[in-house]
Structure formats: structure tokens, C-alpha cells
Image (tube, rainbow, N blue to C red):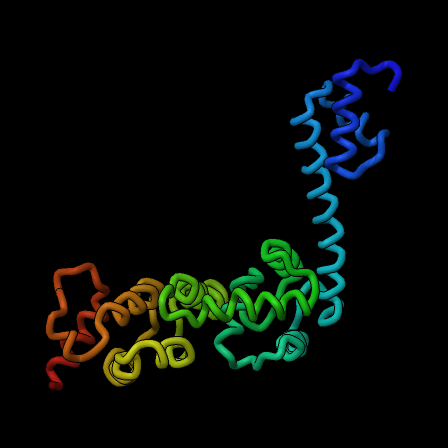
Length: 249
């Protein structure tokens, strides 16, 4: 440090103290930033983050390889993965998990999506994911005070279970997931399902899927439907449902 002035020597000492690195490392970052301390620290932290993420990615890929030796986890691997998390594949919380780990389609988990999703939620191992399930996913998914996360998962489900490039969900598929997600949350769900199966008898569009949630949240009983605003921007299928229910009264 004999060629450095007092300010530069002080910067080296501070850098070493804050970053717990060697003098050589401190000098390299400070010289690269022309002894601008803030820029040197930013460069170090950026490099450290990238290094940490690279190491995290290696661990996440090891976790993935427990369930698949390929680029996708197949249904058998998924069942083992879900079981190791202490879940049942028919548990609706699995949809919330799929949303969080960026899984794009049902029945397979892509390796790249898995790594990206796990990095975003700061999980690397099954134990990490178990902890995240208990402390973040489950409390937010089951919250009755704030339904924002549940609503995101519900909207995600349409694209997740949709097959290929189809624009709508087959009615039987939609009904299965309405029963899984909405029956215990909204009183009119079974009534809507009965109408869909006996009167509507057609595939479900994304707009209907999404707006149904808002409708069931706003109108919680048949009595509430008597004040239904037919001029509001509800899908025509919901208009037909309200007319049908009220005509049966």
C-alpha cells in the first residue's frame, strides 16, 4: 500500500472490513472503480450476488435431479416430489406451489422453470421449500382477510391446466377445478356448476373463468342476485346464469 495516498489506504481498509475480503481483492475492486468507494462496493456486491446465484443454481439442479434425469420432471417424479413435501397431489395447495415455482403446464415440471422459480423464492432444497410452504404459501393461500394470492393462483390455474393452444377449458376440466378451489370459498359455486352442466354445456373462456371469481366474491347468495346489475361488464354467460337462477325462484 506504500504507493497509495492516505485516502486510498483508508478506502482499502474500509473495503476489507465491510466485505471481509483480502487486501488484493479490495485493491482490485477499488482500482477498477478508480477508488470510487461506492462504485467499488456496488461492483463487489453485484459479483457476489451472481456468484451466490451460480452456487444456488447448482444446488437447485441437484434437487431437481432427485426427481428427474431429464429436462422435465414427469408425472412419477412430480408425485415423488409432492410426496416429499408432505402434500397430496390432489391438494389445492399444489396449484399454489406450481404457481410459485413457475411451472407452466400440468403433468410436467420444466428444469429451467424450476430453477428460475426456486431462485425467485430463495429456496434451494426440499427442506427450504417445506419451510416456504408453511410460512408463506399456505398462510397466504388460505387467508380470508387478503385473497390477492389465492386470486392469482386461481387465474394461473386456467393456463396451467389448459392443453396446448386451446383457447378455452373443457367444461368438465373447469368444473373439477371450480370444485377444488371455489366450493369451500363461495356459496354460489355449486349453483353455478349445476347451471354450467345442465344449461350452459360449453367450454369455458378465460374471460368467464376470471370474471367468475369476481362475480362469486361480489354476490354471495341467491338473495344478493336480486340486486344484480345486468348493465355491468359481466360476461354474457354470467348474465344467463343470474336470469336462470332468478327464474327458478
